Amino acid sequence: MKIVNVEPIVLQVPLDAPVVTSFGTMTSRTSVLVRVEADTGEYGIGEMWNNFPSWGLYEKLTTLKYGTAPLLIGEDPTQITKIHDKLLRALTVMGLQWGALGPIYHSVSGLDIALWDLLGKHRGQSVAELLGGPIQQSVEVYASGLGPGPFAELVEQQLAVGVNAFKLKVGKDEQQDLVNLQQIRSLVPPSARIMIDANQAWDRATAIRALQRYRDFDLTWIEEPLRCDDYEGLPIVRAQAGVPIAAGENIYGVRQARMVMEKHGVDVIQPDLSKQGGITTSRSIVEMAASWEVPYAPHFLGGAVCLAASIHFAAALPGNMILEFDANPNPLRERLFTKSMQVVDGRIAVPNEPGLGFALDDEFVQFHQIQLTDISF
Image 1 (cartoon, rainbow, N blue to C red):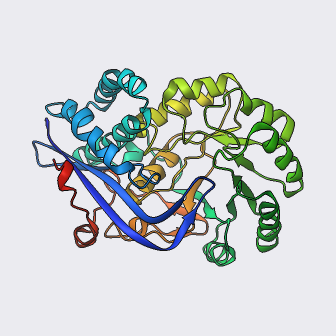
Image 2: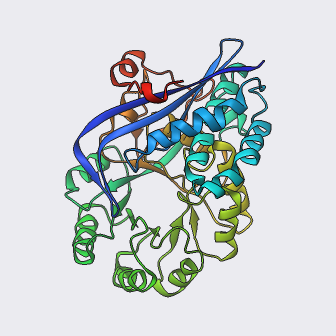
């Protein structure tokens, strides 16, 4: 069994309501998928992270075309660990020299997810079963993507499907953040967990000051209060602010994750399967984090493929707290597959079909696919 073809699939859908963070605004949803095909005709689908910047897909696709895809052709797709190690061994130093570890890890992530999907289909097992079998048949989710603009309607929608944990965006305006925290606490039951996400917006002093003001809200965590590379600052803020810290979506590879752990900078690690090197690297990260007794909560703000992979991952590997689920409408999450993933009683069921357990909706893909002839394969 050999890999014979690697093909990108780029989809884009405009948004009626832009998604705002401390560092940028999304006016459309773009999904960069990758299809890995074997000589048996079997194939798997993966997803590469591509929220910011809007032009980032060109860098990722060029990396896929010239960097990672050529290394896959001819390999046995059932040897996922071997392929994963080959890719990172060949390209990590290049990424450091280039100053672009991100595109390399994003590309490896898409390929890795596709290989797990392909292996599951080949063996007739779900990805969760390949990872050791689902520990739980459904995964609890929390609603993210709330604020800094109006969010009451989104909260009400999530409460209606049983969600009892919510994450609010902060970091643009401290006074507005306080008002938003007061509002969301008034909207949800006393039992509801509330998290906040600063998206790397603060320096150390600002983070400590803001979080000390927010202690009364009994926050489950503050996500990325500092720049993701401020490994020294995270334990300082953690000690002085009195609020648990979550981070990890912008930490690349086991080496960087270990640096954070050794500094005791986080209470929760947040691998993103479409960013960190796919299922394979993310598994190594959460297993390493377990030795520090640090639980994980997968980061997710992409399309249906990464969500499906994250569900299998969270259900199969010990230490999961909860899975992120963007409360904002996203057709690339809701309509990409022939059947959708529904939140019921605050949880998403783990698919039991082979691979990721879903099939692409060909009509939806054809309608929203972007033809990028200047970097065509």
